[in-house]
Length: 183
Image (tube, rainbow, N blue to C red; front, side):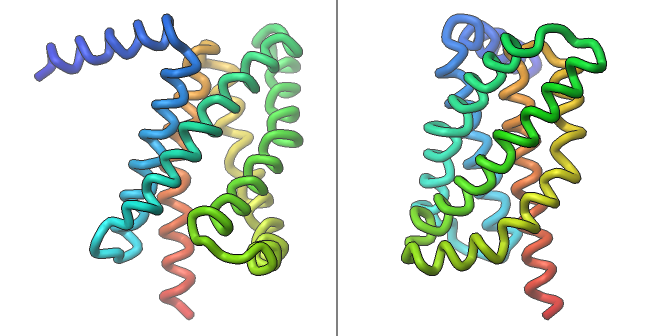
């Protein structure tokens, strides 16, 4: 089994080197799918909602991976180096630009596409939920951004972010479930 895992990792690394955008997009999609599958089960959903799962995979594949790929390449050009000031600039840039955008986009995507609700309902829900989602995001993601920019090479940043996003999605789902049960 260890040899199989080693060969799989070597093949993954080769694909990451030869086809970075495609590999990051597929990785983000797969991790979004894992996150949603686990979240559905922990929420008490007995039968996996395949449409919801595929729409979350699509979001990770078509948006999450590619957006992260180009964002990190842009930040490397804008902010060269790994000294403390440069890492702070990268984290601030990420938290003041892509973080608000990503959270807003996801809330609209989830409401309109995944849940299929009308725009007026989605707008109302986004107005209600967005501030707390963004504030919570700012309490957690800057630490991840710091680790990402300080310690990881460029080719691994989107993958690391996607992995943490997978876990974060499960955590947020459990938190929402706990609030629902306690009411």
